[in-house]
Image (cartoon, rainbow, N blue to C red):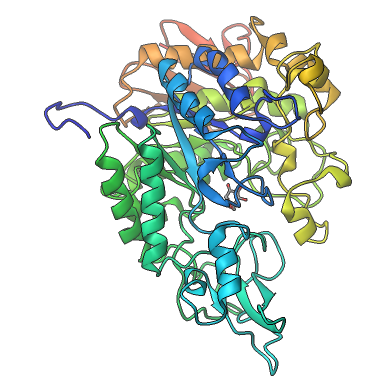
Length: 542
Ligand code: GLC
């Protein structure tokens, strides 16, 4: 629990840099081609030396992997693909011994259709308490052959699937806002609430430092389940940000605060504008929620400044600044295109990767100079780009099937990391007889030069830029202060000073600019020619 006697003490996560480990694609210790806990454990020294403060591990639970682990069949055990519960406990301990914190995903909106609760619901029949843990409804139409309402799944197609009753008759429908293998839980049901409170305790008892809450804004539904046809585009949907969420997160916060280890609850909420996050961040619910407005902002000085200002003035907590994650096109690729904002593109124009790299280098200096915490998505520190030519037959993201191959989905940002330039599969897995399969998605041959060992020690590399920035960030600034002072600049240039003295300048103007008066250049995203900052570069000055 926070120590009230320590007057200026801020929590560790206030200014932490948290590294997202997308478990399937980080590092493979067993040799089966899929990332796992042994792989993470072996790479702890890399993560410590990178200079991050904490890890977020994506779902490690028992799962049929219909959505890469976001379809959980047992929240209290580890999937054999990833390891064992004992290995998870050992990883938590080893992470702490490395001086890092570790949070994990919790997936409360839905479980897997292979979860025992769902099997029990299918067996128990209409009107049963087992079905009341989910959203089962009779269909519409004379024979119940039409879905109960017009909601569509976030992954495409209807949000309802019809089941066959135990007696073989066509039966009720159940709601799934994602894939059909991910039935939505009914959070009006006290049993669901009690179960998740118990799951949180299970992991807190194992010293986990917190949770990234998956789809944190969708848990509570309008029980009338109204059709949404004709609703204004910007009207909150009947499953989105409902008042009932507050009670859930208040109870979670009480639980996490009751443990001696200072915990973190970070919500995944794609609410726009980000001012809609504010009600959840008032002090007794979530600590933070990802700043997806920042992620989706195009590479444009005025728009970046506007979203930074909006964050600092309106949500009462700075950050967390995030440029990429396992659900969006990697920012290096986005920044290499004309439309640099977030989102999926059905038929993307080819990116200019050199331009994207240049901008990504500047963008990380911007993100890490801002007050508050920041997230790094695995591989961005190597300068990885979105892989957009994965052969159709290898695509695993359920979005591809559910959209009749219209949207290729998110596999392009989930390609296994390259660790060693000269090893098979770029060292994603072990060499020798232990290796039974190559990486589960093919890596571009050009990633050879982006392998961690190729970049190690190369002053020009993305990896060394991240390391240098994180080192400086740790040693220099008053990180507990959520303020910055904007400096007068020409159009297209962002410049601000932090209370500790750091001056960050980002040139998005399209022309060389002279550096403002300064004592020293601490770090720059590209070489400074004649003391000038060229387009799409950034510098930290003192
Ligand atoms: C979140 C996850 C995403 C997953 C979805 C359904 O958005 O980040 O990967 O597919 O929830 O659980």
